[in-house]
Amino acid sequence: MNIHINGKAYPLTNAIHISVSSALTLYFIEPQQSTFAVALNGDFVGKTDYDTTMVKNGDSLDVLQPIQGG
Image 1 (cartoon, rainbow, N blue to C red):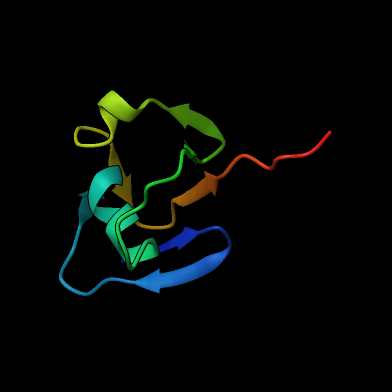
Image 2 (image 1 turned 90 degrees about the vertical axis):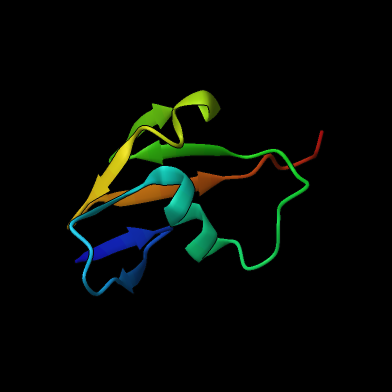
């Protein structure tokens, strides 16, 4: 199974699907203190749905962090 997070490929062996929450652990090596949003194949995923929303082979996650500025 292969998924993409912010354009980077993550090959996963022996997996048919994983939750968004599990996929985020691949992307964030250290626990995140900052705010971010997640989109699965272009559709927003609410934080309360991270554990129940499944990522399948070929899916793409976008992790978006706010940018400060004026």
